[in-house]
Amino acid sequence: MSGTWAGVRERVLALRKAPRWWAVFGADHPGHGHDFGLLPVLTEERLRDVERWLGTGLPEEYRTFLMEVGSGGAGPDYGLLPLRPPGPDTPPATGHCALPFRPGLTAELEEHEEAEPRREDHPDDEAFAATYAAWDTRRDELNDALTEGTLCVGSQGCAYYSLLVVTGPYRGTMWDDVRAVGEGVVPIEPRGRTGPVTFAEWYLDWLDHAERRAWDTTAEPPPRLRFIPDRVEDG
Image 1 (spheres, rainbow, N blue to C red):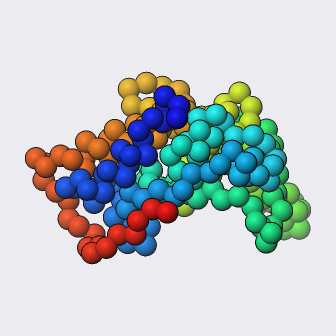
Image 2 (tube, one colour):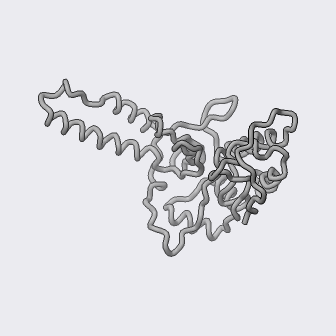
Image 3 (cartoon, rainbow, N blue to C red):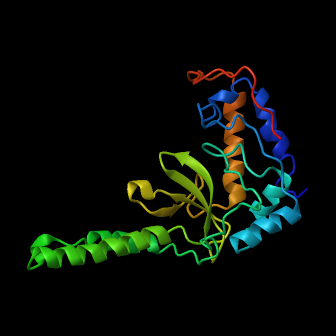
């Protein structure tokens, strides 16, 4: 096992026995909680099947996580989305992940939205409708292109997502998909410094925080969201 992930699976699963495990955001949420469970790891062969399906190799930190910690489950916010090898009924990949990641598109989209056509700038309704339709089409194109070259690895709720960049100079770093509130795709920054974090930095920072919160019996506990008499064990 690599030094980065040595003991991490055991640390995550141990949090199930922490006195305040349910106080960690996302662990005990009705319908979405990860309960500190982890899916089975992937073999190198199965991981290569995934990469062939995606059309691109995955960053090394994420690859080793999948092979040493789990292929989904406990993690930041509502946890890591499952990454499963394609099966006979899996639809063809879109090729979205293999495209170049272009972080500058967020600024381009902002500029485009500021240039929204106005009726008073057009001679008649027909001219305005045509101009607006072209502007709207370009806005949709830019919005869809923002996540090219990324893999969605986690949900934050409220249509916010955590993205792992898999192509280009920012490969291996984590970004927030906040298109739901019109803010595009922006880098996740670590506590105490600027600049995007890598997948390992992002995950291990969450784990450190989760351990402090789950094992702290001195803090005032938040209200329970639900009671789970028997949590499902990891596979």
